[in-house]
Image: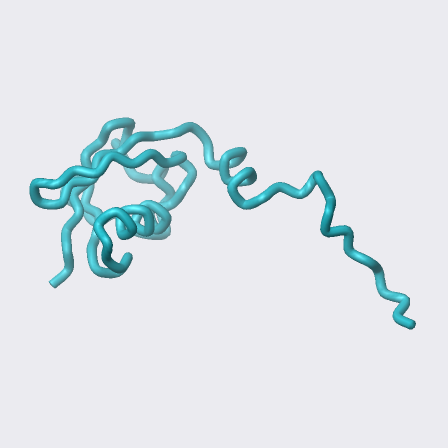
Length: 101
């Protein structure tokens, strides 16, 4: 018989990913994503990263996350930055979706 420890998977004190994200990601920010004549309004937490935003945009425009770049103030938004790290990004900012060729 094993003398290891048992895990209690029914612990009510363990948060789900979504609960933890809501707790630590901060306030919400609504962003407008433009692709040619189409516009997509999405809401994020400022602590979420650009990679997560790209995933959400990719689902909206039905393509892969690596098929486009997000452009704000004429610059590509690095995926490893949090939305809070992007200078001058605020509620209702407009972000260009630039498809890669």
